Length: 137
Image (cartoon, rainbow, N blue to C red; front, side, top):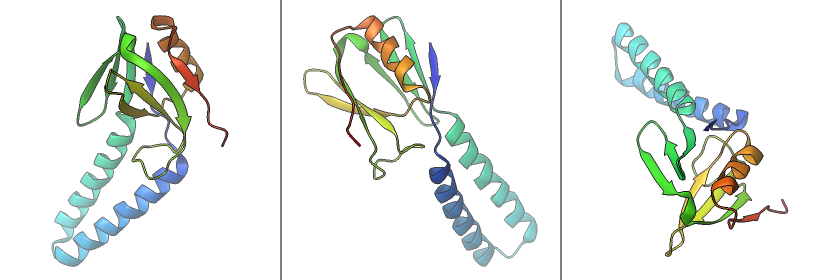
């Protein structure tokens, strides 16, 4: 099963403002209009591709987290708990996230699947011993 990452409109808006600020910096320091236009298009393409590229795959007892820059694999049998939280300080395309605790040393991975309940159910299908905690917020 493949789950796409949820993208929050506020995060997109704030990121777009940062993108505009970067573009303005480029305009100030680069005098060639053609180069300015090319850099602006590259900034925008990079931004939208990074938002759309995060996926979570559940296959053969593994959770595979793919984003534009890295691939992480977690054995679902090692996942101890999944809980919901909404910490805007943690970089993500959404404020509504899941934290996955796994391994003997309780490593942590934050994910933001678009459809959280089916995602959790898919994990439980491979490991019914996962503790699920929903935040009160």
